[in-house]
Image 1 (tube, rainbow, N blue to C red):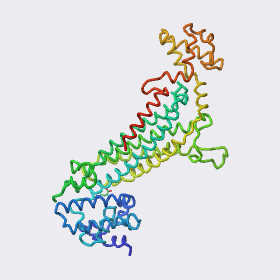
Image 2 (cartoon, rainbow, N blue to C red; image 1 turned 90 degrees about the vertical axis):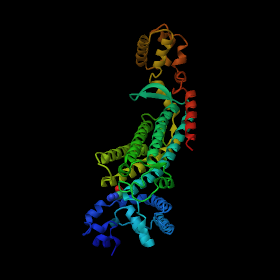
Image 3 (tube, rainbow, N blue to C red; image 1 turned 135 degrees about the horizontal axis):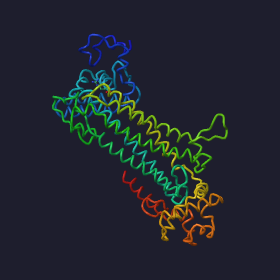
Image 4 (cartoon, protein in one colour; image 1 turned 45 degrees about the vertical axis):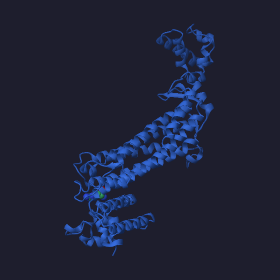
Length: 471
Ligand code: ARG
């Protein structure tokens, strides 16, 4: 007989089976179990148990020999988990009871002492926090890799001119480096949000027990310290029921993916033959089975698409928590799958972008030509007239007429003669051509946050310093 069918026949085989007189319905058993997904936290569960057992022995609740047997048993189970050899049983419901039962299998009755002074309610909250903290650190490192790639590319492209857009229409020339640094700023804030979230994840709920705390002389600060948490959580009822740290992570994830989706959208546009601004190496693209000419930007498209599922996970968790009375409710078991998928999705998308960023090849001449064609220095002409004493509204009018003339003639402002320009205002003098060139236009926006190449290089330096502080 398999382990699962034995359990089904005999209610007392459950770790909580004492007060039950009939076996769990087979469907209910499957419906209420979480081991198929929460086994992902097995190593964190063991880590939490090791700290709990050590704290119990230091506090005199467990004998030293009992602690040592538990410790060695848990370490051996960790090996089984790593080797993929632990047999998970749905009848044992979740990762916590599977590991506890396995411990008793291996070391005998003393294994049953591990659960002294705790509950699965504080145990699961501890496991998720430990697991998420590790994931946050991995995500932070990947974000740093992506940002470094963007900043280095921005430095290289500090004077590459392209059209800047509003309403997706050419507005004013900017530098490609400046555009890349705009992406970096979004990611910088995402990183800060992630690290802020980490502070709230990194608290220890262990010792809150089922909901009210425990009667044993536990030392919550000690188990927190053993697990590398900054401190124990404050209130036992809140500790076992709070999942807002996971919601907060998903909010971070939704914003990050939103930012990546914006960059993705631009990459999709820019790699199209209509824009042709950027070449995305073949390794990030796929072809079409029917149209031989196609090279599709699948990677940015998928990142854009995956934003939807991460937004969904945020809403799932918010809705899960809404109106839950204190303290722990089984609803909370539903926190894991959305959280796990949000983490996996974020990690994959960051990896894709971090690999892709340094490989983006701008087509500088195409970008330059596009900026030249769009009357993108019209604002510079207006500013020039204002500097010569004309009120801005009048200058706007003069430039509007010049642009209309250019549209009719099929020529950019910089391609008109002085006489042609002077038809609209005799305030215009030969020095106008300094501001009508694209180079003059970007160089003139020379202040913090402006697009001038010198400012882009200075901004890259500041960004590099922020990235360095992370290590
Ligand atoms: N599998 C459960 C969860 O994920 C563990 C906590 C169960 N506690 C309980 N009293 N049923 O939340």
